[in-house]
Amino acid sequence: MSQLEIIYLPLDAITPRTDNPRTHNRHQRRKLAKAIRRFGFGNPILIDERGGIIGGHCRYDVAKEIGLETIPTICLKGLPGWFGNGTETLTM
Image (cartoon, rainbow, N blue to C red; front, top):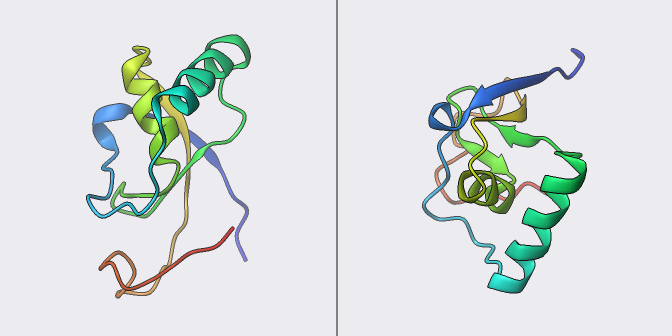
């Protein structure tokens, strides 16, 4: 098993899933924005090898809203070919 590596990527190199099942209300997003401004990112965005978001859609959206240019990511390599077609779940 390889070691995980945190890589800072520009927001335009990351693609959110259009079928993201989770939603966050305005209050949650404001709280997250305040925390990111104050403490920075403590939890990187999980992406696949194509830059598609696996986990962290809300953090990605908030980063865009507050004007960040790059965000920390961890690329999960070697996912099965069917991963990303909307039939899978990944639980952390």
